[in-house]
Length: 575
View (cartoon, rainbow, N blue to C red):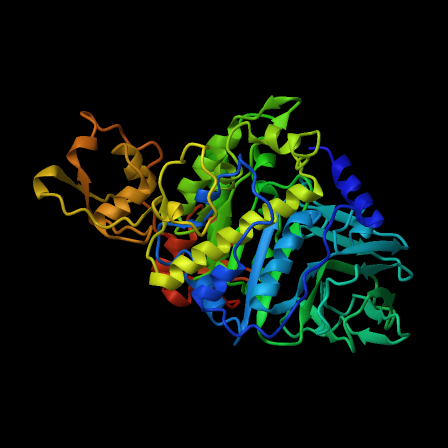
């Protein structure tokens, strides 16, 4: 998709047009677990007839899907809540996630700004709350490149230089930093060959940051004397061995240990394949250890063509597996693109993409936010454009459009959280989309009537057939054979995990069984025993699983719960 509108957004930023003032940030949040307080924060600045407010909630089909995130929110006045929101151009410019961040920080306390990047050094625009400039010679790589020249981290972009006179400057817009946003983390190579850094502040203070120290962390950290309106990074060669500097991003965090750290990372044009190119993602994700990761991608995986569904499904499953391998128990929220157009023609694949993403999210015990339906469903983008909420390309939104999108996400978070506070619901699944005729707020009774809480079926055994699990079978494969869904199989059998044991029996309704069950489409052969694998420096479970064409879950099952804690020389039993 064109980058023209992203540059126009930044032009608006320079002129100070079309964006409301930042909300006051506070660390004094004392009622994060109070349903009445959460409800008082819900609401919309304006209502539009094409938005399906009655459906505006997160969904989950597994009790573990959002457990870590909601439990963390409940204690946000005692410890810091960390959210990582990963996306594409809709996230890089940060108009949407920036407003969402301000709302979350105002509700749960300020834990810091989160990830920032010297985008000028990578030849692209920065965000709505800061701008960047660059000097000297820099090379860069992005996750949208088929073969990036440099290793990539969570930010999806890396800058590299051998020019010791190079550097960059980051200038923050007034009102977006909290006075205690003073912890600066610089993600980069830390070895004897890396240049050291000089952090130059407007007051004239210069802080030296050594990069040769290896303490096991993927970043160097410095405590600033105050929250900076701007800072400049310069390079310094400590001796003749220092030859380069490679940066994967920075993070500005609050000195307090409570509140909300809502970090966002996005690259124009990124899709699921792009995120899987980020080789340092497992290491940096393990260090960040977020309570929630939001996977907010969509249109770039099929725009303007037809979606390759098997590839998309594999990419989403692999991404979830990576995250769960390094951060067990992490909450993951999968979302989707809203309706878009290509050369004035509606892209119908958006609807199928949302449906498939929802199925995979529930299969992998993740939560799902059906932003496609909430924002109006098919053809709604035309209405967004008529209301000056979308750009003429009918793909990107205006600043006002992104503010509306942030409101929808914010209210969806709060409504779902309030339901969890009320009864710690083990599942919260919306029924089929309602007709686009009513527009209640998310706190009205209409939404409650759209909710169903699945419970195991108690129908007579005369209506059931027992299926015995064979080697290599998965829930999704079994569901396909019996013309049902993974969610329904779990509900019928009272299970929450995707893991199956050979010989395990599952009950399936007879009436949904085909007369002649089709053979499994992708049943794997019986695993062949392998010689124990010797762990090498830098190995992680996901890379090992990919190399030997097995899953992380299979390795963990054979090697026990401590399988993630790898050390060079360890032996792993592989399927």
